[in-house]
Image 1 (cartoon, helix red, strand yellow):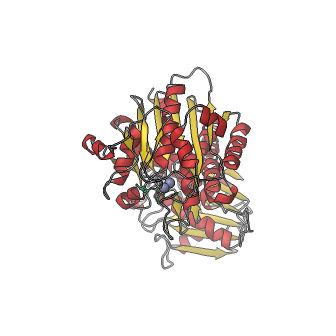
Image 2 (cartoon, rainbow, N blue to C red):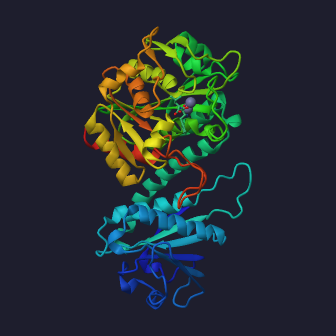
Image 3 (cartoon, rainbow, N blue to C red):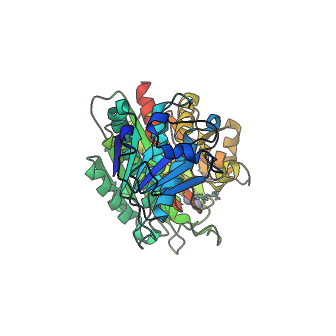
Length: 492
Ligand code: BES
Ligand code: ZN
Ligand code: ZN
């Protein structure tokens, strides 16, 4: 539970843990509000240094049972992400110490060259996201906190309450996406995953529709069905709609939902298979964004399209060299069954564009290992012919620290996807530029609609815990898309 209290209560609150972030080279709290303890602590070695935390037990001057002084480093280097990390770190320490409630003191001072909203937003995000532990199959070693509070100046309590409620909703969305990604593939085969998505969406009164195998066949989703062919689990396509009425624009979000990517007949080698339950992270992020948008009552019509398949090898699997007819009518030569994401996205993009005529479409996908080679594990690649739209996303990435980097879509690379026998091939014969050619493949199915592709193969999943994320799905894309949608609504 998240609460906001006035900073005049810091000394009087009977909490288990009081958390005070500090810088090493400046006072970032108004001295009158701070316990004398802080002044004494100043002389301790490491005080305020980045990553250095000092804990006092039963200190005098406050009613808190413990006080954690969290180091932020140098004042001029401080940014939102450092605050997010520091709060995530503090929460993890509290979890280890089996603390059930913590009160964070929010620095609101002229000394920091940061907007008060940015400070609060980052701190709340770091704490709420850091407090999450996946507990479906075993109890975590230590429980998560039950109560997290933030102390702000008296005059800003009302505003901080409103803002923190919004951040809470967005963090819940991120955690929902994380949870879906962590669930193993045996428990989220397309039909079951579709049900889970629909159930969560209906709670928020989103309109939902599910196309099953028969419907997909009838509507000629040839590329999507070709990916599903090897699995004994049938494909699904989930369509979610948030329609507040009277809106100027319709935005469509498409998310890759491969519930397990074995590679198909082009079977992946050991080492590349183990985390492929995460290949539906795009779908998870899109669905969670739709749900979040509904909770926030964002004044824009949103359509979410989630093609769900399992990519498996078997006697009925698609073979390298097979040719299929996509929903758009274009024929595709499937020369590599491991390049399956683009096949299901192609059909989903054509479908959403033809059916809903959106003003813009964004797709999120764990699409290529090549994008991870290019940008590493923490930055997503953005591909779009529309600079204005993609720059807005990159800016949202800077703000949320779900970082995105604009990649090129060179026209002359298009030839690499030529097929001898079909309209297009799903891979090139080359080793290089795989993230770009994958994006160019998708662009063949976007007609003239404003479109942007975000390759999240790197940042969707972490194998080692970070300051505010445990091992597993990161929920990457939810905070990013929520901010981006807000920007799109503002500029209409
Ligand atoms: N799901 C993978 C991409 C991926 C790789 C996601 C690593 C997350 C981490 C995708 O379907 C894939 O297999 N792509 C191939 C494309 C190739 C066959 C052209 C790849 O990147 O190797
Ligand atoms: Zn693949
Ligand atoms: Zn894949």
